[in-house]
Image (cartoon, rainbow, N blue to C red):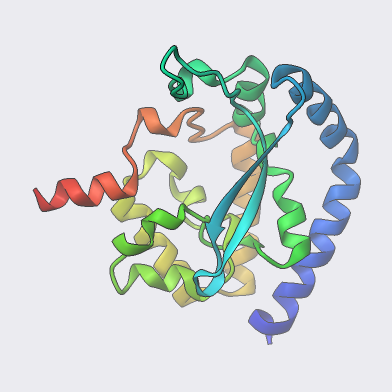
Length: 206
Protein backbone atom coordinates (compact mmCIF):
# COMPACT_ATOMS: atom_id res chain seq x y z
CA UNK A 1 0.00 0.00 0.00
CA UNK A 2 2.67 2.52 1.05
CA UNK A 3 5.23 1.65 -1.65
CA UNK A 4 2.78 1.50 -4.57
CA UNK A 5 0.22 4.20 -3.70
CA UNK A 6 1.01 6.45 -0.73
CA UNK A 7 4.69 7.07 -1.47
CA UNK A 8 4.17 8.06 -5.17
CA UNK A 9 1.25 10.34 -4.27
CA UNK A 10 3.20 11.96 -1.44
CA UNK A 11 6.20 12.46 -3.74
CA UNK A 12 4.09 14.19 -6.39
CA UNK A 13 2.25 16.58 -4.09
CA UNK A 14 5.30 17.32 -1.94
CA UNK A 15 7.35 18.12 -5.05
CA UNK A 16 4.55 20.25 -6.52
CA UNK A 17 4.02 22.36 -3.40
CA UNK A 18 7.73 22.35 -2.67
CA UNK A 19 8.43 24.00 -6.02
CA UNK A 20 5.66 26.54 -5.39
CA UNK A 21 7.00 27.46 -1.96
CA UNK A 22 10.61 27.54 -3.11
CA UNK A 23 9.90 29.37 -6.39
CA UNK A 24 11.31 32.72 -5.14
CA UNK A 25 14.58 31.00 -4.12
CA UNK A 26 14.53 28.96 -7.34
CA UNK A 27 14.24 32.16 -9.37
CA UNK A 28 16.99 34.01 -7.49
CA UNK A 29 19.45 31.11 -7.73
CA UNK A 30 18.65 30.69 -11.44
CA UNK A 31 19.41 34.36 -12.10
CA UNK A 32 22.60 34.23 -10.01
CA UNK A 33 23.89 31.15 -11.82
CA UNK A 34 23.01 32.64 -15.22
CA UNK A 35 25.55 35.35 -14.50
CA UNK A 36 28.09 33.00 -12.88
CA UNK A 37 27.90 30.46 -15.72
CA UNK A 38 27.44 32.90 -18.59
CA UNK A 39 23.82 32.05 -19.31
CA UNK A 40 23.56 28.38 -18.30
CA UNK A 41 22.09 27.88 -14.79
CA UNK A 42 21.16 24.20 -15.10
CA UNK A 43 23.10 20.95 -15.25
CA UNK A 44 21.65 17.90 -17.00
CA UNK A 45 23.19 14.45 -16.80
CA UNK A 46 22.09 10.92 -17.63
CA UNK A 47 21.56 8.69 -14.59
CA UNK A 48 20.13 5.15 -14.16
CA UNK A 49 16.85 5.06 -12.26
CA UNK A 50 14.45 2.28 -11.31
CA UNK A 51 15.23 -0.94 -13.19
CA UNK A 52 18.34 0.85 -14.50
CA UNK A 53 16.20 2.94 -16.88
CA UNK A 54 18.19 6.00 -17.93
CA UNK A 55 16.78 9.48 -17.26
CA UNK A 56 18.21 13.00 -17.18
CA UNK A 57 18.74 14.46 -13.75
CA UNK A 58 18.33 18.23 -13.33
CA UNK A 59 20.47 20.23 -10.91
CA UNK A 60 21.68 23.78 -10.59
CA UNK A 61 25.00 24.11 -12.39
CA UNK A 62 27.67 24.89 -9.81
CA UNK A 63 30.72 24.70 -12.11
CA UNK A 64 31.62 26.58 -15.28
CA UNK A 65 32.97 24.95 -18.45
CA UNK A 66 36.43 26.52 -18.45
CA UNK A 67 39.11 24.46 -20.20
CA UNK A 68 42.91 24.42 -20.32
CA UNK A 69 45.07 25.20 -23.35
CA UNK A 70 44.59 21.62 -24.62
CA UNK A 71 40.80 21.87 -24.58
CA UNK A 72 40.37 19.71 -21.46
CA UNK A 73 38.06 20.75 -18.64
CA UNK A 74 39.85 22.19 -15.64
CA UNK A 75 39.60 20.40 -12.28
CA UNK A 76 36.38 20.62 -10.26
CA UNK A 77 37.98 22.98 -7.74
CA UNK A 78 39.10 25.34 -10.51
CA UNK A 79 35.68 25.36 -12.20
CA UNK A 80 33.57 25.74 -9.05
CA UNK A 81 32.16 29.27 -9.01
CA UNK A 82 31.56 31.28 -5.85
CA UNK A 83 27.83 31.10 -6.46
CA UNK A 84 28.17 27.38 -7.16
CA UNK A 85 30.00 26.80 -3.88
CA UNK A 86 27.20 28.63 -2.06
CA UNK A 87 24.40 26.56 -3.60
CA UNK A 88 26.31 23.34 -2.81
CA UNK A 89 26.99 24.30 0.80
CA UNK A 90 23.32 25.14 1.30
CA UNK A 91 22.11 22.13 -0.78
CA UNK A 92 20.15 24.53 -3.01
CA UNK A 93 21.60 22.74 -6.04
CA UNK A 94 19.19 19.87 -5.32
CA UNK A 95 15.99 21.95 -5.75
CA UNK A 96 15.56 21.32 -9.51
CA UNK A 97 15.38 17.59 -8.82
CA UNK A 98 11.84 18.24 -7.59
CA UNK A 99 11.05 18.45 -11.31
CA UNK A 100 12.44 14.92 -11.70
CA UNK A 101 10.13 13.83 -8.87
CA UNK A 102 7.12 15.42 -10.59
CA UNK A 103 8.03 13.61 -13.81
CA UNK A 104 8.16 10.30 -11.94
CA UNK A 105 11.87 9.68 -12.53
CA UNK A 106 12.76 10.11 -8.86
CA UNK A 107 11.36 9.97 -5.36
CA UNK A 108 12.01 12.32 -2.46
CA UNK A 109 13.69 9.44 -0.61
CA UNK A 110 15.70 6.64 -2.16
CA UNK A 111 19.24 5.68 -3.18
CA UNK A 112 20.98 8.59 -4.86
CA UNK A 113 21.18 8.16 -8.66
CA UNK A 114 24.79 7.58 -9.69
CA UNK A 115 26.54 7.46 -13.07
CA UNK A 116 25.63 4.92 -15.80
CA UNK A 117 29.27 3.84 -16.06
CA UNK A 118 29.07 2.48 -12.49
CA UNK A 119 26.48 -0.16 -13.43
CA UNK A 120 29.01 -2.98 -14.11
CA UNK A 121 30.68 -2.42 -10.74
CA UNK A 122 27.78 -3.26 -8.41
CA UNK A 123 27.65 -6.65 -6.76
CA UNK A 124 24.37 -8.57 -6.59
CA UNK A 125 23.31 -7.04 -3.27
CA UNK A 126 24.18 -3.51 -4.35
CA UNK A 127 21.96 -3.88 -7.42
CA UNK A 128 19.00 -3.73 -5.04
CA UNK A 129 19.39 0.07 -5.25
CA UNK A 130 17.78 -0.07 -8.71
CA UNK A 131 14.69 -1.95 -7.51
CA UNK A 132 13.21 1.40 -6.43
CA UNK A 133 13.20 4.97 -7.73
CA UNK A 134 16.32 6.97 -6.87
CA UNK A 135 15.88 9.77 -4.36
CA UNK A 136 16.90 13.35 -3.73
CA UNK A 137 18.00 12.17 -0.30
CA UNK A 138 18.48 8.73 1.20
CA UNK A 139 19.69 6.64 4.09
CA UNK A 140 23.33 7.02 3.04
CA UNK A 141 22.98 10.81 2.87
CA UNK A 142 21.73 11.10 6.46
CA UNK A 143 24.31 8.59 7.68
CA UNK A 144 27.41 10.44 6.61
CA UNK A 145 26.74 11.71 3.09
CA UNK A 146 29.96 12.00 1.06
CA UNK A 147 32.15 11.22 4.09
CA UNK A 148 31.30 7.50 3.72
CA UNK A 149 33.34 5.24 1.46
CA UNK A 150 31.72 3.48 -1.49
CA UNK A 151 31.17 0.13 0.27
CA UNK A 152 29.40 1.84 3.17
CA UNK A 153 27.21 4.03 0.94
CA UNK A 154 26.09 1.17 -1.30
CA UNK A 155 25.37 -1.10 1.65
CA UNK A 156 23.12 1.58 3.17
CA UNK A 157 21.30 1.86 -0.17
CA UNK A 158 20.63 -1.90 -0.10
CA UNK A 159 19.47 -1.70 3.51
CA UNK A 160 17.04 1.08 2.59
CA UNK A 161 15.44 -0.97 -0.19
CA UNK A 162 15.03 -3.93 2.17
CA UNK A 163 13.43 -1.87 4.95
CA UNK A 164 11.62 0.92 3.06
CA UNK A 165 8.62 2.20 5.02
CA UNK A 166 6.72 5.40 5.75
CA UNK A 167 8.41 5.72 9.13
CA UNK A 168 11.89 5.32 7.63
CA UNK A 169 11.16 7.81 4.83
CA UNK A 170 9.92 10.49 7.22
CA UNK A 171 12.88 9.87 9.53
CA UNK A 172 15.24 10.39 6.58
CA UNK A 173 13.39 13.54 5.47
CA UNK A 174 13.54 14.97 8.99
CA UNK A 175 17.26 14.23 9.31
CA UNK A 176 17.83 15.72 5.86
CA UNK A 177 16.18 19.01 6.82
CA UNK A 178 18.20 19.16 10.04
CA UNK A 179 21.39 18.31 8.14
CA UNK A 180 20.78 21.09 5.61
CA UNK A 181 20.14 23.61 8.39
CA UNK A 182 23.33 22.77 10.30
CA UNK A 183 25.28 21.97 7.08
CA UNK A 184 26.27 18.56 8.46
CA UNK A 185 28.64 16.33 6.41
CA UNK A 186 28.58 18.68 3.43
CA UNK A 187 31.47 18.12 1.03
CA UNK A 188 31.53 20.85 -1.61
CA UNK A 189 33.92 18.95 -3.91
CA UNK A 190 33.38 15.19 -3.25
CA UNK A 191 36.11 14.20 -5.69
CA UNK A 192 38.69 15.64 -3.35
CA UNK A 193 37.79 13.06 -0.69
CA UNK A 194 37.03 9.84 -2.57
CA UNK A 195 37.68 8.46 -6.00
CA UNK A 196 34.98 7.36 -8.42
CA UNK A 197 33.34 3.95 -7.95
CA UNK A 198 34.94 2.42 -11.05
CA UNK A 199 38.43 3.44 -9.92
CA UNK A 200 37.65 2.33 -6.36
CA UNK A 201 36.57 -1.14 -7.47
CA UNK A 202 39.44 -1.50 -9.94
CA UNK A 203 41.92 -0.62 -7.20
CA UNK A 204 40.41 -3.34 -5.01
CA UNK A 205 41.34 -5.91 -7.67
CA UNK A 206 44.99 -4.83 -7.80
